[in-house]
Length: 132
Image (cartoon, rainbow, N blue to C red; front, top):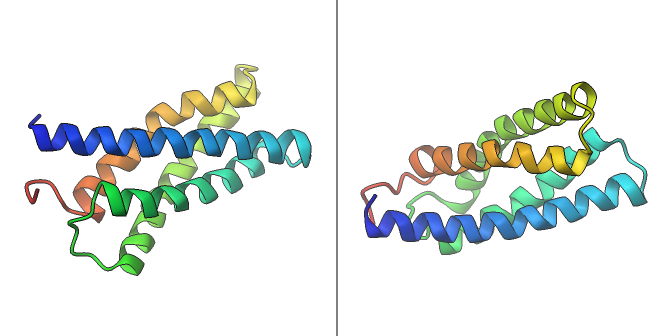
């Protein structure tokens, strides 16, 4: 991996980790305070956090993309929609089948889905590999 790729991934990781902590906070709030089902809460928290992630990622990680903001956001949401399917499926499996805590389950699901989102946005949405 070249220096630019490491720098890009480091920025993406920092933004992703920050918005993931926000996602976990929302998940807890929706589930334990508002008493919304954990799977519904997962979806709501994910959509809010991933939207924030998009705008920070676009500005600080993928700033040299030629894609318009609206088009990039739609592509980002489509990619994230697949990620959301994986998150909810993994959450249901970990909680219902393995009896894990829903917050621990969300953390475990994040490892897989975070990498999915990064790679899909890198190569498909923002198409910046080799451009900077």
